[in-house]
Length: 399
Image 1 (tube, one colour):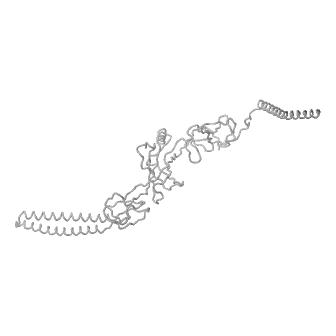
Image 2 (cartoon, rainbow, N blue to C red; image 1 turned 120 degrees about the vertical axis):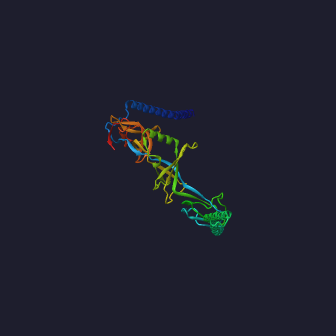
Image 3 (tube, rainbow, N blue to C red; image 1 turned 90 degrees about the vertical axis):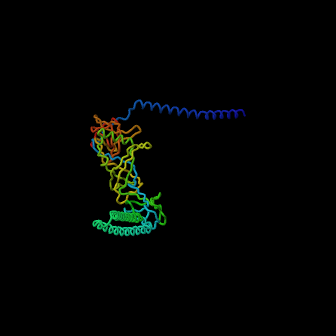
């Protein structure tokens, strides 16, 4: 009984030692492995060297920039507007009895728009014509009397007073005839004004007073509004900064430009299509808007087909100014990073060198304008940019 208890105790002790020993063995194995790994890593770091630069030069294509004279081509966001807005009003009072147009259509100058009831004016004209006939009859009689008195006066058969009276009556009759002629002209004018015509060619807007309404002469509200759209105006703002830079570049000789009235305006529509006709600048504001910091420029553009409508947003490109001695390079050569733009160039040792540059505007042909950082003597690398690093030897080939 004692022997059996002693054996069981020994087995329990051995099991306990085994359970405690296994984690210790595993821990020791991990420590040995880590020591071995770091020892060899340190050894490799101390005895290895960084990858060497390739000894054979890499062929690369290079671009030699040349000073050019290029169009400036400044582009601005603008909006179209009618070149003339006319409010059509009645010149005589009366009832509107006729309308001869559809709202929104293009009307030609002289087109009949409204008809005011002409009958009252026709009556006035007839009365004036009758008054003229009567006045002419009176004038004729006064002339006969005056000539008779003149004949009697020659024979000394009448008094001077009678002659003076006859002459005075004749002059009064003449004046009355002229008065009735003026009244006829006024009646004819009012009759003409009863027909309201389009004063300009343009797009006619919404009718504000229609058939059946009584209108007064020169009323407070217009009957309708016409927008003249040929030519049409384009209006766009230029910032104060752009104005100052442009003037400074002209002063420094970096830009040559014709007079403002000789500049051409190219219009691009909202869908990117280029309008086929170019315009001219006809107005520049005389002050800077304090709220926006911009100056308004306006141009006039032919619009005979009515393709442009007031209120359209467009892009306006000014053609005429040219930049001189401009350095441009392909877009593919430029590397842009958070620290700025740069390019790779081939130095005198035929090695790659990083060159910081100041980018200007984007120009036609997929090229950047370089404001500073490059000269005509530089060789700008334009391919294999992901394979090369500063200091690598290269073989430049003209691209």
